[in-house]
Amino acid sequence: MVNDMPDATDTTSETPAEAVSMYERIRDAEPAPPPPRDLTLETGIAPASAGADDANPVIIDVRDLNVYYADFHAVKDVSLPIRQNEITALIGPSGCGKSTALRSLNRMNDLIESARVLGTIEYHGVDLYGKNVDPVEVRRHIGMVFQKPNPFPKSIYDNISFGPKIAGYKDNMDDLVEETLHKAALWDEVKDKLNESAYALSGGQQQRLCIARAIATSPDVLLMDEPASALDPIATLRIEELMYELKKDYSIIIVTHNMQQAARVSDRTAFFSVEVNEQGQRTGHLVEFNPTRRLFTNPEERETEDYITGRFG
Amino acid sequence: MTAKLSDRQRATQEAVRAQIEGKRSEPGAVIFRLMLIVMLLASLLILVVLLADIFAGAWATFRDRGLDFVLSGLSLNPETAGVWTGIIGSLIIAFMVILLAIPIGVGAAVYLEEYAPDNTLTQWIDTAVRNLAGVPSIVFGLLGLAMFVTLVNGIGLGGSTGGRNVIAAGITMAALVLPIVIITSAEAIRAVPRSIREAGYGVGATQWEVIRSHVLPSAFPGILTGTVLTLARAFGETAPLLVIGVATGFFSASADASFLDTLTGPYTALPVIVFSWSRQTDPQFINTLAPAAIVVLLVVLFSLNAVAIYFRNKYEKKW
Image (tube, rainbow over all chains, first blue to last red; front, side, top):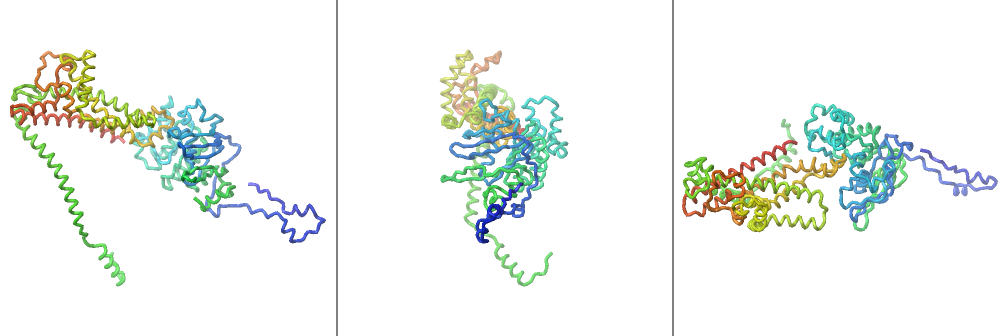
């Protein structure tokens, strides 16, 4: 963070010969710059990560995204360059369209008949909504973890192997399952019960199984829609640690209601807000997108500051 | 445990006790509950009287004839008449219902729920199917007579009956229960949580893969429940069979009748036997043979249902 301190003495030094009254000098002086802000004390939120690096290439470039459900304008004019091997958090009040925006990234909105997605979303420079793009293939590259743990009503093994199997994986499935469960930090807990129902696991374990299932097809982006909101704090912590590990291999985009969570895990944060029109329809828009530390300590927008300090939403 | 209480605490204790102790008297609620119990007992009583009457009548038949009654064919002589022909006829009809109505009905339900766009036409079809399920069975009998008998005869399976045989009866019954199969299967498919579908799509499954690997297995127990209902209906229906020419009199298949002859020749079914026996002049038919046939009908029906329920529970319990 560089603060360009404007030199308050400039105006006077240019005209040294003139006699300037103390009053005039005070009157004409540029206001003193505010001290560098740090909302950390006020919010009690300590943004930890500093992984935001503009050298990381943009992997998903969202430009002017607008999403409609029939006549309802859910998301308006969102532009987000999402960078590789970073964790990008989408935060904001309920109904601000952050989940809708997230679901546009792997064409999950295609499943809703009335949904229309306008604007461009480029993945490695390829338009995801291009004419010849197969949404099924998109989802194999951009995996998803949902809010409520939703394992298939099958065995733990089958939960992991389903994705690779339908994608035509031919190598040793046992090895892949083990490797995937290791990556998801779940192997030690389930290695003796791979053939038991996934429903026998605890909520936190189920969610990590869902993360494992999502990475089993080797995507390179993971979308997480409030992955820890249904979990207790310890299970949440484990998910966050896991995300931090996974960042090495994947780019992660997480929607969260929990600002502390965004501050703890993410490298960049996008703050969404919502406008309510006369008909009571709530249209979400992007307010600010900045490195997480910047957004939580010295936000550009007044609205962001109000939100993270708890004065709104 | 009981620490010494101060006067003040004891006073509070007494006041609270006075407030929360004591029996509430609510005569209205008591009467209402009694009425509910009476209603339940009344419906149970009807069932018990019905069953007792049937079993009392059937008792003599089973005592005197035993398995011979079950294994004998139709006859004018009450001493030798049995229900075997009816069992075979009913089982063939049930088999044809399973063969025709279940795949067509489940297929239609999958299409309606998973593929069809949600538009006016689909809604109209949905309503039509629901209404079809309420159409009196006699109407399906007329349909069977007008279409399926002709069809069966047309494709050369008319046999000695000119198409009024068990094949036409099976197709008619399948058409009769088809709406029920569609409705129950559609409900079962609709009940599969959205989260499971999303999970499937989320790992890059196609719609077909999601339906085959997740939706149908999850809906399977519900679909089987529909099958149970369907079989019960197909087994009990008499009216359509009467319309399309089931044998209400007596016939005897020749000893060297081939399987095709059985299929294309005259036939009867268990409920039809009950119906025709209850119209005989000989009181033995009415008083002992008809109840015995009802018992056989119930036993066969419950056995079929038990098989379906066994499979349903097996798949339900799996996870």
